[in-house]
Image (cartoon, rainbow, N blue to C red; front, side):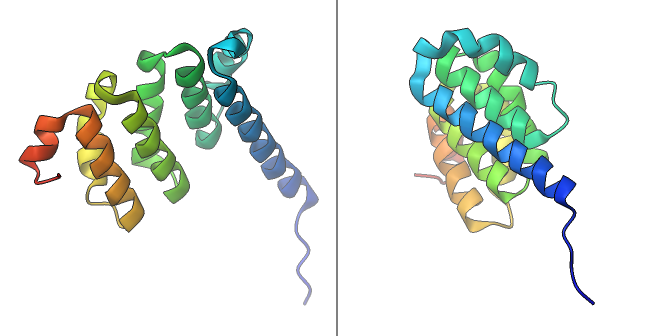
Length: 139
């Protein structure tokens, strides 16, 4: 028996990865990439959670839209694979106190099965709500 990957699936996944890389590049550019905001906003409606989380992160880096970024990061923390959960924690840490609505999801992530997610969640909680982090023994 030989395994033959479905070229269609490979292409779709590759397209997702390329799109995510483009979003990362735009995020690195920052506010100067403001022309990309409408496209990134449209990407928030994609079915692929990876694209939604990265688009939201891009919007945060370009336009500081915490009200858009935080809900997507919460969704990523609660429903994403390990890479998405890590990304969400890192982005929430960067957003800081403007991500206060994410505290319950970040607190849940402190019990994640992945040690790196737990560590990143602790770091995020310290930046989002230092008092809550201290209450939970996170220094």
